[in-house]
Length: 119
Image (tube, rainbow, N blue to C red; front, side, top):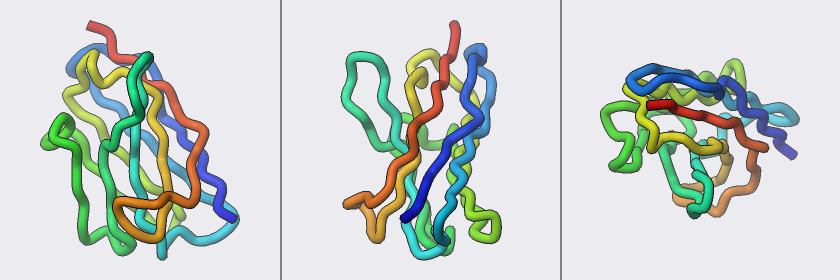
């Protein structure tokens, strides 16, 4: 079993930055593809970013490309999402997920962390 706990969310003004963390426990995530998703009020959950086991490959949704960066530290069993140039449309609950392959299925999900961007 893997437990995932997100942190780092909060309220930020448009143009600001936040760094989200997804800390894993229970077992190593070094053999898992790690993803970030988000869900805005009244909308479906959407893919944000993914990173391969080693961190050598990443992919992003078009809406965040060039602004967000996903990276991982397997020694710390943690995945990060650096979010820059945040916009009000980035407001959502952000979730991390772990899977054996991309794009899923995902074996484990965190509980989410709220990101609110004010205009």
